[in-house]
Image (cartoon, rainbow, N blue to C red; front, side, top):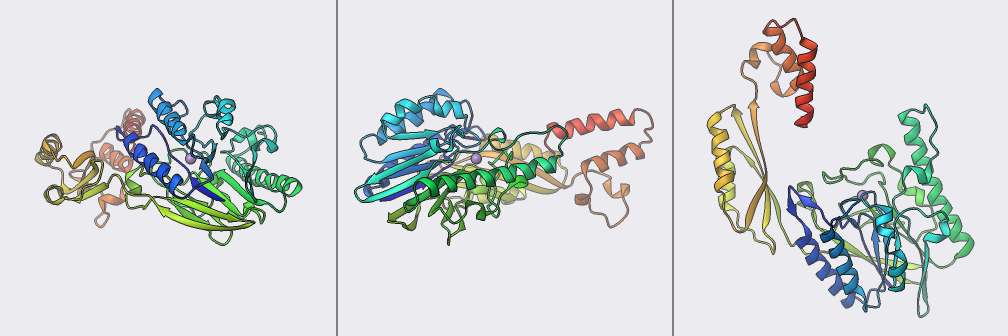
Length: 399
Ligand SMILES: [Mn+2]
């Protein structure tokens, strides 16, 4: 029996207002061809099917269109909810999808037995626990007055207890059969990228790879966008997202994992996904960036998207205008600039007088600099209000 593991499709995701649905559509074409070519029996999607809890009509259409194309392939599907998904949105068509060999676990069910699926093909049989993203209410009873650290510790313990209950259920009811556990969570050691905005169970409540125990023959994880093997010995894997969802993922080779099951033996095959679009970053002085842009010649199926970071030594109005002009006039059918940043290394004029010699401007926070300015200007009244107003500006600019 052959099982294909993928996750983090994030249907509906935009990258700086660029719609990434064409990227996913090309992935879906490739995935369907792969499923047919490799005679895949079960497709696992480990959470974050949609980017938003309330997906747009276009996103829902893309999802159902893919599911429709799967009908008739003989491949069963199991889809679990991630932290980006709404359990009820995923679960709404659960009953009807069940008739089409598509099983959905949007959120943690009341009974653990409801997330167990048993698939059979000839002599082969596999048990899959479709564990979705576990929300606070699924794993923890909140107590008034608890500290942040207590809460994190309870979440960690709750996750551990949940997966241990999954193993107990397996041991009691299906022992001896090949056992695959799905999950959508942050396991320590995994890499985090820019596009993972939701850190509800992020750094703070990461769990160890050992919480899955000895029972599973393969653990199919989602949540981290970079493909990653938590443990090759225990077959604990993140498949990663199929397309690049942020500039920090631009160097990654995306993949799906194909698991071949014989009895209780599993073989894991990493299958790279072709790159349909290049994400590129250009960095340097304005002149250097211009040269890099002119030299760019890599082409991909979809237009390349660029991030430019201009670093100039001194504040200069001309540079600002030249950059604006570059952004307005840049016209390359192979490359679109979607993000730009201009940094002046010696940002504040007169800063050298404000601090002791030897302190670099880079080591001073904007707030400290503002306070110094107030001091030098001899402001004594309303300083708290001025500082609060400045703090508000910094927050709005995300600085
Ligand atoms: Mn996620």
